[in-house]
Image (tube, rainbow, N blue to C red):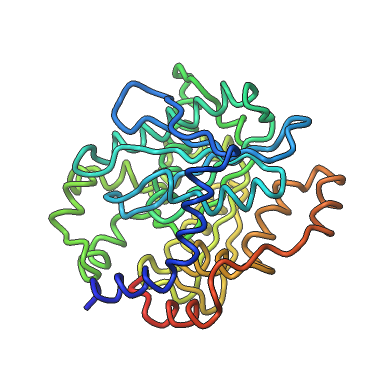
Length: 328
């Protein structure tokens, strides 16, 4: 039934998917498959604004996909719409299971972030205005990479990029404590045996649970190095419960990190990332992210205030039906 629901869900949103695919494959604003490392899937896509004057703020984005079906093209809709607001988006690909397990995914993401930090100026990006963002499994992977980097810095280890280069972290519909999620995922169809294989066994849960790592006494000094963290979650998210973001924010605040949680009433796992952007017009999540990125740029804020509403890509009736049958 879930497979049938997924098929119907995809068909209902197909008018939007086709338009985004056309943009992704044929727009001169998209530079696809830039190599950032020497492993399979070590590629990223850049979504560039039409206006090339001046250096632009940058979002390094790690896509979701249950650690199994993640792909950089899943960020094309976000990249298209942020590029319309004069923001560069780098969608970082990474090895999925079974090609890789969680430590390789985190390492890939970290290498991709390093490439953005060290090379984005060549593409018109401002290396002093880089924001890290992840969605779903990508939010988990990006958070792991960020916290691992903060711990390395606090220990004086050699690094290729610095947490101080990240102005803020945006986590969308992510899960940050594997101990609390393994049974939930099992009941949702991501069976325990597969999940344990992805996460390299229960012995690795602590290492790859950002919520657990930041509250360890030995790692608390690293919390002060973290950038401001904003987590976004729908209250009716059945794939990853909103409590995942709530408890992570509470933990971050307890160890002295700057963190906030923004909840969206009645939104599901895919409403915030797919249906709402496909709807066009006003979008609270999109407006919140853009406002944070442009907070120190009065001219950009002024342009945002008079920006035309985003174009609708899918009729409302199809979006309402997709919301009702969504398996997420």
